[in-house]
Length: 135
Image 1 (cartoon, rainbow, N blue to C red):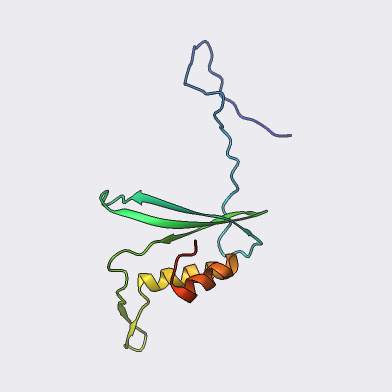
Image 2 (tube, helix red, strand yellow):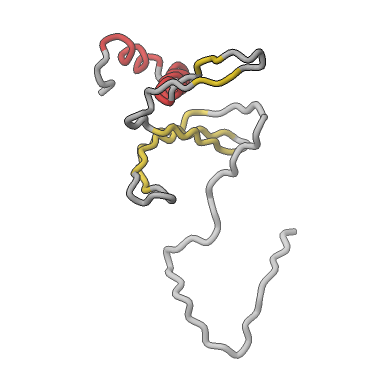
């Protein structure tokens, strides 16, 4: 039996603007827990832009790849490269040697490639073959 906790407002006329088409219970799946292995299906890709929080003049472009399964959903967000993202930085390893790290463009390319390998190998082949748009 499901127990509902309710708050009763007595002897008050209250109008807080409920709309008849408004939904108050989420119908979205919960997020998948980290470090688990789940069976999921690709559920679409969405392109969005948003303004930065620290710098409202900065605009960010992202691709959101959505996956869902019985246990929940997962969204992989890839930030589109911007000028300067081709720079490869270096770090010092445990032996004291300077080693290069991948650039943000490298990271974007390989993450997108991994996703497309399973979602749409044909699109990856087109992108890799003639450097043209998939469309």
